[in-house]
Image (cartoon, rainbow, N blue to C red; front, side, top):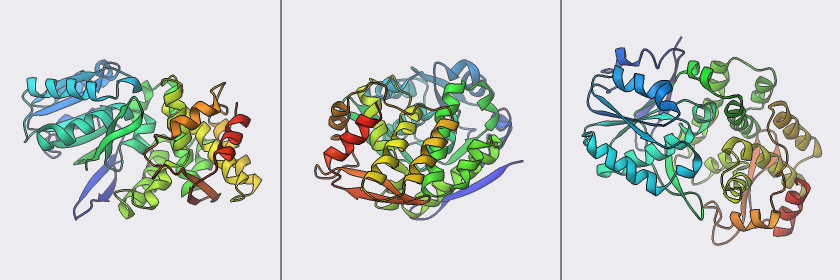
Length: 348
């Protein structure tokens, strides 16, 4: 059964998010309906290509497969340049479509390539990880990393379609699945506490995805360009991006987010924004999902230094998304360095 969520775009119009089991295998039959009967570049990584990319590019009437290496360390301008060259080589023109088939790294990098190639070509997102399904494929933010920090180069690129097929999660590793649960927990903490119960009782994938996606859709429709409440979706991410950067991306994004959520909850309590039972709730949710709960020897001072390049900080002032309670996030500026360091020291 197909679930359709329409996302309003700034300036008018909308695009659909379609959630349906078996949708990827049946995509060729609906190619014309989805505008995939013209020239298509299916961009994926070297892991997903043999699983789904080769079959999809062969099944579509006029598609070519374009690949990039697998891993956050390849979410770079250098990789984007390689994608541009491949897009030219396969004859993708301004009337064509980029299909971003993969996890968050593929979605972000291929999406950025689509936003900038020939000043913008059509984009379809087909996420293949739980994390990408519930978070990064939704909301039109695309971009790549610089050595100085994550997502420092990017754009807003509205997709024509997001197609989510929960069946592809059958080939997802347990570690990657847990990473996706970190973002589901985040959505529960900022807007839908019932998601925490769904994670604990291991709710059906399709229902979990639909509920988590709806949280993000509600927020990005109200604030498409992150002028105010969309920043709530960064709960835990200031810590997480620093953990990823300092560890040279040995940590997966979802693992870093999980610890970041705990850090954000503890910082909230330290600043007298919330009660201690909220910290317990966050720590229990992270533990139940089998996600990391400490920074495992990373140096707090190094993490603080990495946060200084976080694009969410403004005029050198620290800026964190914290919690007053379940479903009650708040942006707090100028958080004292000493409080952040203390929280990180207790997470070692």
